[in-house]
Length: 231
Figure 1: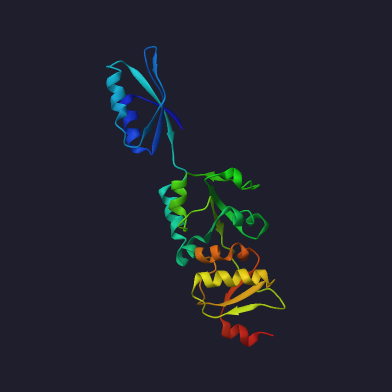
Figure 2: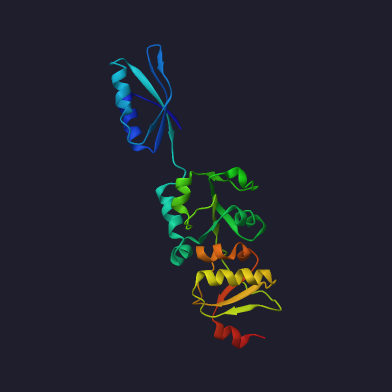
């Protein structure tokens, strides 16, 4: 965003925005070289003094953060089941798993990366963000390069399969993720879970599956009723 301001207005923008690059300060025929001004700087005042009252304009380039406070708040809330259900969204972290998403039934709604070129996904717009921004929205102690915000499918469908796993009351996210990964390894396509089993879209479960959640159908139901009618 390129803007031209009078000095006193420019100073207010410097105090408000995360980072501003002064392109040029012009007074008379003289131009002052480009300089960087971090947030809250008082260097604009120094420029004011250096120009000694001459009339001049300040040309600014304002770098606006890609992630708004509202977006960060929503993404951070996705570690809780009630907000995943509210927004119908969940998070996938890491380039390896994200690259598998286009070949699955999951829809990517937003994609953020510190290095978009490493993803190379067709039909998916990647928002470039800074490492500090990635850290704000990641649920990992050591954030990976990219994060995808995905839509949770509206319906859970039980598929016909010759072999499946039935889980009752699994509470640990890491354990469920490992079971899903093992099921994928052995070619088991479906896991039936009791309603009190930990949510498959819990960030820790998704991470523990290492991408296997894309190939294993996980369904939640009343086990007593399901097993009574199971043939």
